[in-house]
Length: 458
Image 1 (cartoon, one colour):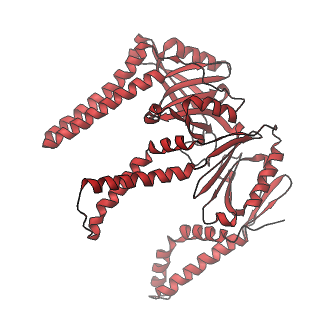
Image 2 (cartoon, one colour; image 1 turned 180 degrees about the horizontal axis):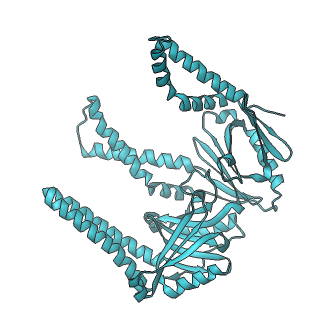
Image 3 (cartoon, rainbow, N blue to C red; image 1 turned 90 degrees about the vertical axis):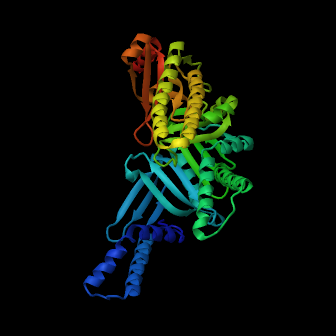
């Protein structure tokens, strides 16, 4: 039986129509004046435009229907050019839902379905349907998937860990900058505020609190569990979010921590997944946003019993590799800071001292991070998996990568490194875009070649 979306979907169709056609309004006004059609009667011209947009939204809504059959979902759309899309349930890979707080009391939700197709047709959006319809779709998917029945296992986020995670989030800095910017703009409205340190501290505190609440509500009551080889997660306070991810889509597991979270012994467990609707950077999905490092392996094993429960002990960098890593990072900082400080001395006068202090702070930061990277970098492998420890951007990561999911692996070595018998390893696994690259620098040459030999055996 064909069904229409909830009438509330009209609002979303209308929003899309306005977004796509608002750019035509100035052109319509100019053409009407040029053709002397309703010239100068802008109210009537704009009213006609509004009527056309409303009519287009109504047509789009009433021509869009969906139908749940025994083995497939059928989507029909179009008024003059009819389109009919048949989507077998077994082809649906992930389900994402989003229901803002204002439609939650009506038990309605927006559903995004991703199929096995890798083009734009692989994404199907049901803008507003009932929770009962969503549950019916999920139940039918489970039958069609014919997955092995597994015990439902999961993880519920710890409030203490979430609080520390939020306080160490880069969003805290962004919130402070935003509030400071608003504080500075008050003068534009002729609002005079006497500067004082207590007031400034209050402004900073407001920025921290707003950023804290934004991150807190996103992961509030985060819960993830494994049901019939599908990972299902729910979270959110004001905006509820849900995620369904088949285990077979996972290309690798990442234990990730910023430098500050590394000191607090907290990590995030992420899945590298070939999914285009994760809502995250690259193709990573937060399986567990934050957990104590000592419990991370157990938490992962609860979700993925067939994956390794721990990272095999890594072969660390040799002393020469650690020295090379530090020298490389130190040289980058030294020459850049030398040029910057020289220019500051010549053109900034006494303000040069602040540039010099900032350069010193950055130097200490590089020293601190070099020690952490040297201690955590390494590589190891077993019959099926490659285990890596390295730095990626501003984060410390440990990765578990199945051999058959690695797209390529290459070794690189400069002339200077050849004398030291050191090598870099670079590899890639598939994610939602072009691939997730990982690089381990300054490994012992023989260790790197052993990894290459292991990879070639697949």
